[in-house]
Image (tube, rainbow, N blue to C red; front, top):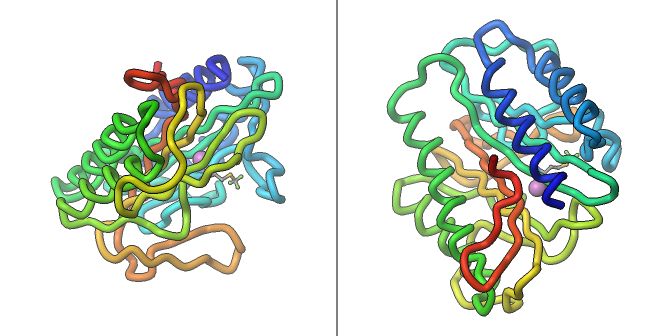
Length: 236
Ligand code: MF3
Ligand code: CO
């Protein structure tokens, strides 16, 4: 899993270098697909429940599961790139939201608060705690900053499959759910909207967008619970 996570991290770090106005989301798809293969991995999303690509490329009001296309990024857009790697049967999963060129301070705040929410959730992924301590930390920080957390997509256990038990919601009261144990592997992935939390799915059957058209950000890490702070496998 450490190798799988490292390939996720390498891929997202490399994507940072190619994000620019005029680049299509399909170009990012090809770049990531090739990079994962060159590093000995298999793109875990490709073919998963019929998903047609190696990455999810979700632009602006797209929350998650944006399918790569000929759409070209424009100055001021934000794009969430989510990817998974299967390395010899072990999985990693990670996502980052990138700014395309310059974005407004309000948009920068949405990105920063979403990433901070992920970090605060990770800080709760400690043996002896409860699963929903992670959920609550994420929700509290996002809402304290005037944003909302998406309800219909959640984080998840991960390991020999991309999605395993338990689900890891990004909302809820603390102190509920299974007790966290050393060695549990979790993908924690807040999706935070600038407006309301509701989403709808486009006609392609995949792309989730905010119902009110507001912007959405998404950050994800794969972590291993430990007695102290968790190991974050998808950080370089
Ligand atoms: N956002 C999902 C996750 O990180 C990715 C779904 S995989 C897909 O768990 F293949 F269905 F896109
Ligand atoms: Co995930």
